[in-house]
Image (cartoon, rainbow, N blue to C red; front, side, top):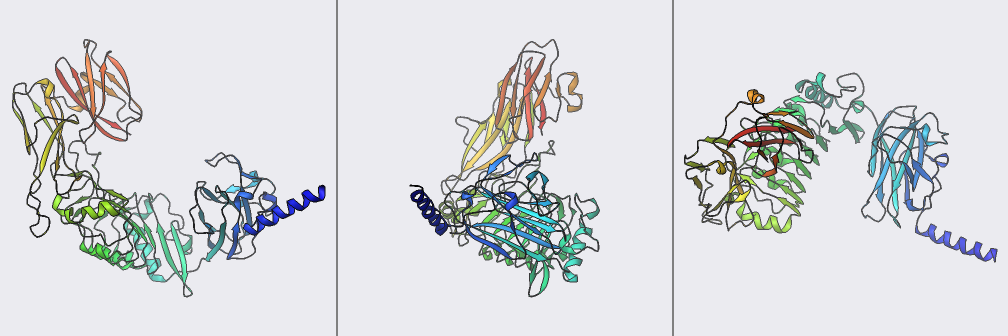
Length: 556
């Protein structure tokens, strides 16, 4: 009987091995030693690993996972990469690839490891290897019955051409490099491959800069024209800085670029048409800047473009004028229907119906994530304070009715005014008159413009805050009447009213005029919880004694 079960077990094990490699390195003491690169393990059944884990308190999960270990000693100063791929070309749902340093290659307890890369679900990891250092790599995949290929490789860090090093130094000097958040090795004699945010590659025996990743690093100033001096650059990621001035035309020389991220920043001017030279580009971020004008027709040349981000936003740091921070794009939108777009986001700009009418239906049908609402008129948000009994006229700068004769010939627009995000019956003209205004007419007004030739496309007038009988009080002196604190706040604001006030109400709106909160104030000191609101500026009307006090609350 024992022989029978043994034979059955052997047959099962053989079947599993035919399907995939059974990991034996699922305990750290059994980690696979790598003696040289490149190195690969193919057709690994990660779900057959039985005993490993990650134990850490710095955002890494704690517990047992079907994970396996590899180990090696860095014999060179190099850029190292490990990648996990599905052997059949499928997707990977959840996986870890985490690199640790270790005091030796004879570790028997995970607590001796020091994490050297991010601990997050990712199918790859990169690190600059320090010569002579010991490394462990942990790999986990949460997919049953899946074969995985695991590849290890390194690029020896050597000197890059002088022109590329000089271009990096020019970027450093132009963007106030001494004040960056992380300037590790920058503008030093260390090899460029060891500079923070720089990745390299080897092409025909020459080391080149392949990636510049400096997002959120405090870059402040213009991008220099030398940015075009990287013939093998595939990724230029400069998001979330304070870059300013014009986008240099020389970016168009980076013809190997796959991803370009320049958002958000503080660029001005228009998009250089030379970006249309980036024929290998797949992802382009140009949103949330101060750029204006039309989208260049040369974008039609971006034959590999999959994701294009051009959306805008309101500058909530300037509540007195609520100026637009970014993406004031307008004018005829180029025909991008031939591109393999999966994402096209153009919301919060100034495009008119006729600018996109010809391609609109195709975008709607073929782009999985086509985001276009709202667009805006050129009117900025305003406040109107009026006495009781006065007539108030609300207006907007109309969107052209005529369209392009040789194309869709748009015949006219439809209008609908709103008060506090509620439709006003009969308010269907390009202007709206409040006759003999009363306290009840106070609120935030907006208007939506539509056109039947572009169904679903909405152009919106920025908010008009109307106060009838409004008690006009400067924010700096408001504490004598009503006090809101702390402001800014991230969760709770206290509203302190005069003790003589026995009844009051509060209404909050966002800067687009949408009502987000309403309540009665039953005490002279009320705690208002706003932690659920998104960050931004909110207009708050406090109504008491038939007067309205308008106050801005900044939610961090």
